[in-house]
Image (cartoon, rainbow, N blue to C red; front, side, top):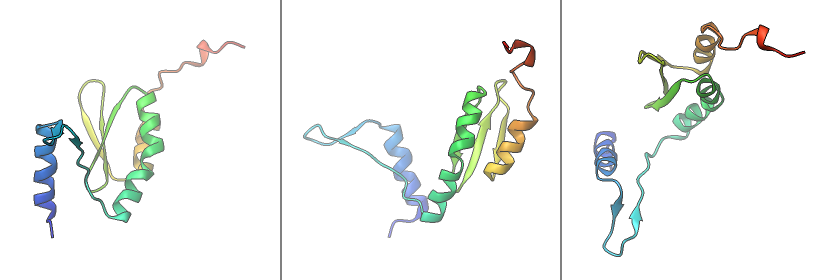
Length: 103
């Protein structure tokens, strides 16, 4: 059985040596193997990640299931739930101004 630590080592080395090819030129792909519960939590961040991207922010999913948000000035925030990320986004000053609406 592969431990998480050994699995992470393999994934990190695969990323570092990307692309990984075998003798016949075929490329190998490596993916983390998450539990169904972890995969479900990662999927729960998909909508808010899109909204954050539309707001000009970078996001990354971190193991086990946290959302890392990189602000435009480089500051980072870690969110443990989509609801917390949504509240954070709502608290940000809006870049959309009502005066810009055309009737």
